[in-house]
View (cartoon, rainbow, N blue to C red):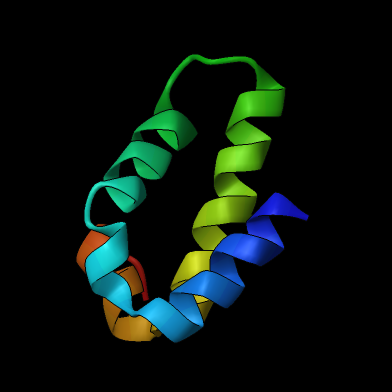
Length: 65
């Protein structure tokens, strides 16, 4: 539910509100944190990127297509 809420907020607030959050989520995704933390970060990251668009995805994962 929290990840869905992040996505909904991203749609209405825009990307400026997530300049610090997205790098933190990405750092948590690749960290050695427990799987629950990584899973939550993945869900939050996916919802925000889904709301902000594909260009934002390429900023954080430039080698992916």
